[in-house]
Length: 163
Image (cartoon, rainbow, N blue to C red; front, side, top):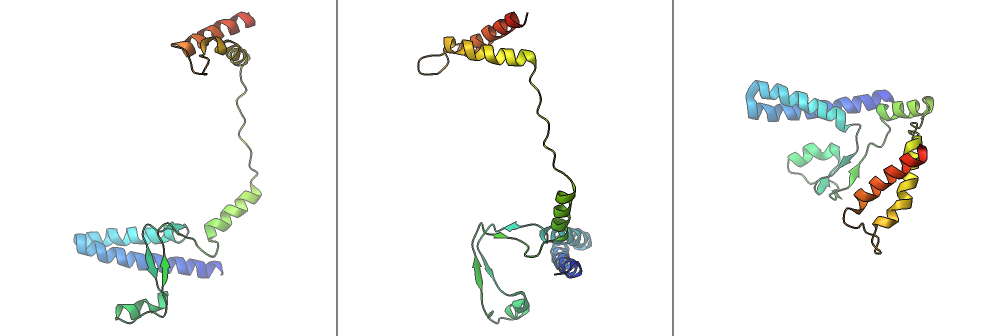
């Protein structure tokens, strides 16, 4: 599917949702409501065309070309039951997806640098591991005020070792 046909499909979806939004807005708020509803519908169409959609309820799907016939009371040739929680995704990659793939190839991904622990931090961690067992119960839990006491003792031990 070419970019032109995808853009055309996106524009068609956007314009149909704009018309629906304008109709709903006109009922609710007159001319101003129609304008607001049309804009919201058009923007929704642009977003929906590129994003996967998770169904919130069960749906019965029919072929799009048979929609007008269904409105006139005719039965569709076939229906598909889409259950709640199913995901509908665009079949063809959209322009946004293609651009993202190109950028992933061109731009190298650099892992963020980890913060280097200070000398004191390393000394404190080592001291805390040594003194923690004195302030714990046999079951492995902390004694009353045990964690606070272990911190205080570890800080004192770390300061002594560094000085």
